Image (cartoon, rainbow, N blue to C red):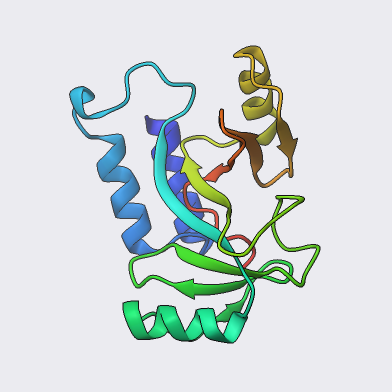
Length: 167
């Protein structure tokens, strides 16, 4: 646990996570054992983002602004656009017109292309090795994150709990 807290503090000091993110992660690390997953490969700490494929970026942005009060979109990695939540995390709007936005090869409008989860002590090579050892073979190592397919083919992106996706 000490290693995890030191890593979180380092990420906070480097500006990679917010104070709120730091405090939330420490609270989860110190939560009683009965509140923590008992037999999983990794411990999820945050839902970083959900990537949604959209046909019309402006129309989708207006919907999320009107219904949820989210701020205007900002550009993120690739051709994606983020709608930020005040407490962290975001919805990524990924235009269907872009072949480089998202990981799903045959995306349709409204698809959840993937979602990203922050985990404890992230190290891409270790995560890939543990997933392969556990029998998961639909993997992609992107160095700052690892993608793994769930049983229905939905891609789950694993990264550090405080990872900011270069934003």
